[in-house]
Image: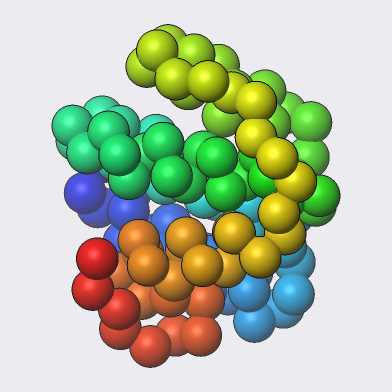
Length: 104
């Protein structure tokens, strides 16, 4: 999962640069799963909720995020908030969507 996070961070940056926000949401869900498997539950929850809150997240990514939240005993109902994805990705990925290093 640690190596996957590095690859997913790169994918998130590239998708952000291309303004492929649906892919940013998808990759964020996958990064959340990696954090979950590493035992970083709050980071996983934050990424899942950010993806669920974004209007560009596709149905299958939403289903995965909701299912993994429920498996963690968390509420999968999230208010719409398109800004939350950028804020969360910037805070939680080793390098945010702008390509600059950020530390959680």
